[in-house]
Length: 187
Image (cartoon, rainbow, N blue to C red; front, side):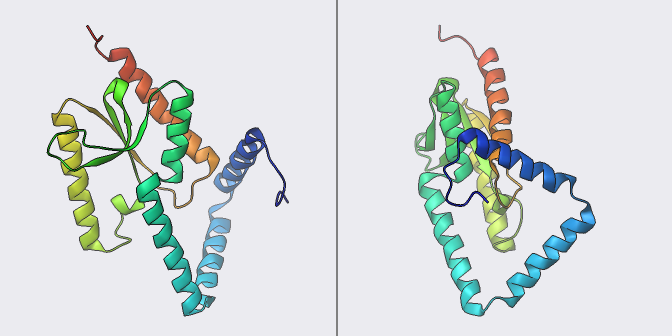
């Protein structure tokens, strides 16, 4: 019903909250019917349509690796509006270490990682999951060992609504405020 209409941010937020609540309030039996229907839709797709969808997913993953995921960009913009300086996909925090963090707040020496499903589910295979989890552990250890703070968010949702992204932002904002309250003065 909103296709082609210019919506305000407030309206988009209200729609997102409403849809999220509607799904949450939906009985599990109805959720399972929807899941079954989606699975049937997938199975009815032609092999070429499935391959095109997979290709689009890979393109999106590569794009988010360079410009940040939708959630990372949302959180970065919201934190900037709140007065925090944020570097998206910050590199070279630690000399001689080629690691990158999703978001970095230099004023609080805080790295923020928003981990998608591939960080804790074997959607790309068990070997890839083991490598990912090992790399995450090494990165976190290096960050902490070098005097930085790490906030790690598990983004379990396959799709992100504005409501869910705002929920993640609120969690991060609350943690940053705690860090700021306990951060030693520059002197």
